[in-house]
Amino acid sequence: METLILEKPGRLLAGDRAEPAAPGAGEALVRIHRVGVCGTDLHAFHGRQPFFAFPRVLGHELGVEVLQVGDGVEHLKPGDCCCVEPYLNCGTCIACRNGKPNCCEAISVLGVHQDGGMTRKLVLPARKLHPSASLSHDQLALIEPLAIGCHAVARGNPRAGETVLVIGAGPIGMAVIQFALERETRVIVMDINDERLDFCRRQLGVQLTLRADVEDLPGELRKLGDGDLPTAVFDATGSPAAMHKSFELPAHGGRIVFVGLFQGQLSFEDPLFHRRELTIMGSRNALPADFTRIIRLIEEGRIDTNPWITHRAPLAEVPGVFGDWANPATGVRKAMIHVAD
Ligand SMILES: [Zn+2]
Ligand SMILES: [Zn+2]
Image (cartoon, rainbow, N blue to C red; front, side):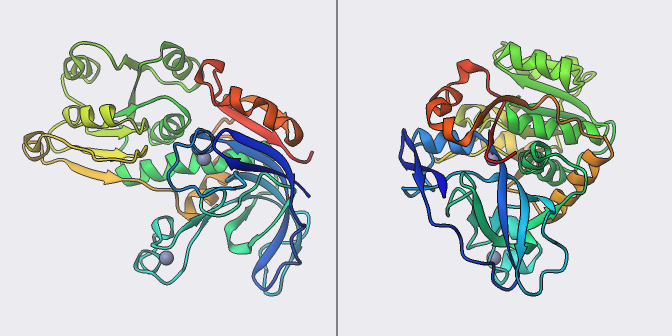
């Protein structure tokens, strides 16, 4: 079975893997149709993703079709098209018991901790498959990256009319923006890339944007916020410098949600934190309810997925183009791998 294997950083090859066995109880055999490529995959390709062991089959943003279900699976039948919640959790640790499977102590993310979807077929736990009767395979593969933003906004929980700052207008930032706008907050987007800021204004309906390298950031933010700083700040950069700087940007009593991540220490001036009585939150992965909610929002036409996909390739051609996709100069927002039509 044709499979792309990342043998080691920089070396992505077309390989062969055995067909999966028939699904057991509670499982489903699926055919992969689409695999979205994201920053995690590109970091793995560059060897900058410390969770990875090699060789690894990447791919966690999946649009799939059910081929066969095992015993006890009632919500799916062959032919159903689904998105995949790729966060396989233990079900028994304290996070799982408290309804937070997204940060399970023993989490295993498809395409990260275990082999993922850059292949023809997979057997998956059926409860991780969320079907839709009308979404396209492309749209189904976009649900996971959207869910990252959906969950982050739920963590920050901004109200309508509140001023929200989103730092970083890459795919994670775009997802945060969509759900912040969906709550009718006043969204300011900050980035160092003018093209990305333009895109947010033209395609996402963002009205307020700011270059991250202006001299007096808090001052410029106050101008955009009618004299006040934003009460909710979302970092979608995963850049240590941007995250450090973000402590200067929330209003007194405000909060910061770190969506992006990096490996290392994050430091800040304690008075920036204490004087403002800030709340600092991490946001990791997403919850099952985020997946079902996003399916509904796209079905109802309340989220437009058209602006997302910029690049496409069939599975066999991916080794030849993956290096380009990993180069920011090629302007990739979301690359989509076609495994089956
Ligand atoms: Zn991703
Ligand atoms: Zn758990």
